[in-house]
Length: 252
Image (tube, rainbow, N blue to C red; front, side, top):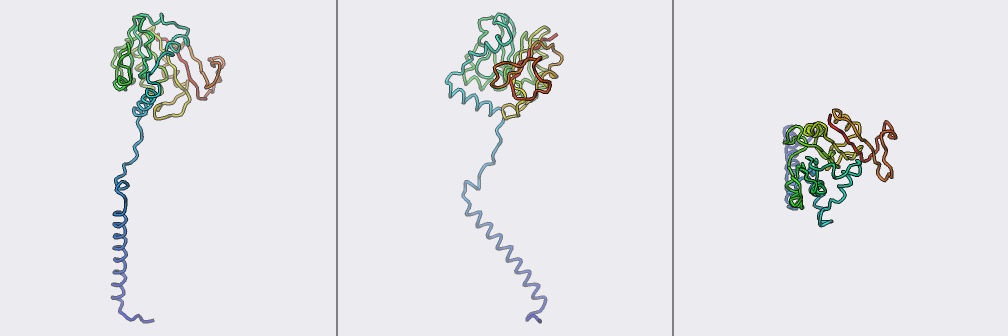
């Protein structure tokens, strides 16, 4: 069938139609944007919470719930669990890694010991009551501590080693600042999934490897809800369940 207008005119008509379609899409886009609520137009992207924010949120929540952050159970954690007494800390230089704001070494204030805490949030913890403790808080990371080699007689880490950015770097520093003959006391969650606050999950075997230069004195695993600890002799070789691990080493 013969069209009633020449080919050139038909090409122009197709081009014009395409241009009108594009123009219509542009107008529709502008209208939609103008009709969008201002809050939606300027909505901020969701930012993932950092480890420090997670830690502070937790401790501020505990402070609000408890009013006063207690520390009465630390004495048993650092003595009875290891068949030790407070006198074993007398006149010792003691370092607690990642101590938080509760005052983990306060139970030793009558032992004439030098009590030092390392925690990157130490300054913020002062606002939660830590500034009233008989301890020296140092706001540094465990991976880069400013102490001399062999500066401490006892180094402790209670539920904090899995909070560090690098367990390998932290373990090297802990070993470095411990004097020859000194004790390393570690309580930590093992075989747990990583979280924002606890980004460094590991097994008991990784702990053994990280502190391989030290002499192992004690190791036991305490499963959640378990009445008895699993000691080295009763622990399956492939134990990989979430639990609390207790480790004690001595530096040769």
